[in-house]
Amino acid sequence: MQQGTTNETGISRRGFLAGAAVSALAGGLGLAGCAPQAKAGAATQGNEEGTSGAQQADQARDAFAAPEPITDVSEEKDFDIVIVGLGMSGACAALAAVEGGAKVAVLQKVGIPMTHGNFCAVINCDELTEAGCQTMDVDAVMKTFNENNSNAINWNLVKRYFEESPESGSWLLSRAEEAGAEAIIPAPVPAVKFKGKQVAGVTALAELAQSKGAEVFYSTSGKQLVRDDGGRVTGVIGETDAGKHIQFNAAKGVVLATGCYGNNKDMLAKWSPGAEPFENFYNPPVNDGDGHLMGLWVGGRMQEAPHPKMIHVHHYVGDGDKNAPMRKCPWLNINDYGDRFMDESVLYEFRCNEAIKYPDAHSTQIFDGNYETYYAQMPNQSDPANDGTLEDFIEWGMAFKADTLDDLATQLEVPADHLKATVERYNELVAAGHDDDYLKSMDFMFPIDTPPFYGIRRQYVISAITGGLEVDESCNVVDENWQPIPGLFAVGNAQGGMFGGSDYPFDITGLSLGRAMTFGYVVGRDLAKA
Image 1: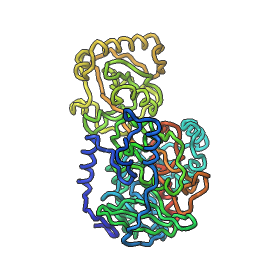
Image 2: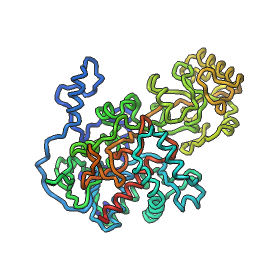
Image 3: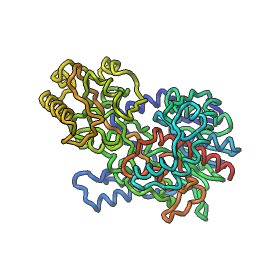
Image 4: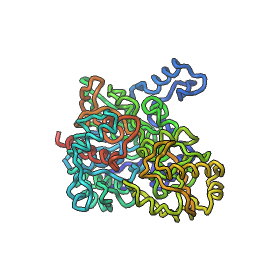
């Protein structure tokens, strides 16, 4: 067991991840966790048949109402900084804080660090520039970023991210090396990833923080914040898996690093209703919004709805656990009926809004034997997260290849007459040089007439909800009047204001993890100095 680690359940990494995968595939991700339960007998989803508007409003109030204060605290522990959650933001906050001389506690709901994703954006960092990564004109990027986020960002927070990203990126690379994690710079993409994906890097950073004195209390959930008579947040009450309540006092501050609320149906319905119909595949099952709710209960201001949903094009959930190449590529897309249904050249993050009109947000990419030539001619194509070649996926039964469209339709289980008519019409539009049907850019339209023919089944799934508690540029949670709540901070997906609008923008690769890393580092560093 690592120094300073408490794990009352002894849950193993292999055991937890296996259980999470089974529950995800079974659709059992709606864990209640720390979210208050609806009254007995009340419907838990507002769209349940026969539920009136008044009843829905009552249910919403019940779902987010503050619970009775916990009074059966068995012991108290004193720290400078208490961090709730051990993902990318929590691990970075803990490591930076303990390096600054602070006495640090981390509460983690499960028995391991938890994060997901591949890339952590790092902007204009010397080490990345030397490795061949793109540099950015920050002023121009911020202006475009604001427009792509519906002019709904916290400008000062986003500006702070770009200002701090170079330093935090250098720090991350240095600490990853110290921790023995293999950091990868995927030039020219300005980002950092880890061998074994981000969870390997986060685990190494967490262990490094422990080796330097941070105490990690595994299998311990944050339940309620503690305030003094003046309203300052002075600690958090945690609950072990055995039901024991411990009060963790924080002389300098509590940091909410609890991730998003993708598994809380009530919160989705209220703050990100556009995400409700999508399969929740990537999200750790323990991400149920408990940090958001704790902040609300002490007067924190929630970012205005809708909160941006991060939707990725994935494999069909039933087809396995790997992503085939070219998932972002705007090939001809058909639905389960064999019909084309959208302009495939729209921004990647917005395609989901058309796909969700069809069962389970399924779509299938169709292309022909000249695909390599055509792909090379398309502008701005990048797909660094492949798990194998196209031929690998055909062998695994997750992509399909046929000499005729009839045979391809059979393999894809779509009507052959519809598929052939769709391809015929598509080829007519290519020949005419204009997409009369959906106005797709001709830069991405190529004929489908040369065997073999290919189909890759895809599904749009939730990766994260990227809205949360409003903060100032220091990540201090604010109240309804935009005044900081002393002693309370939010980072990662518990934090609001970094993104706006209904859909997370993909114009900067890995920005969700990038802001988690940068602001985790910044808050840990600055609180240690306070």
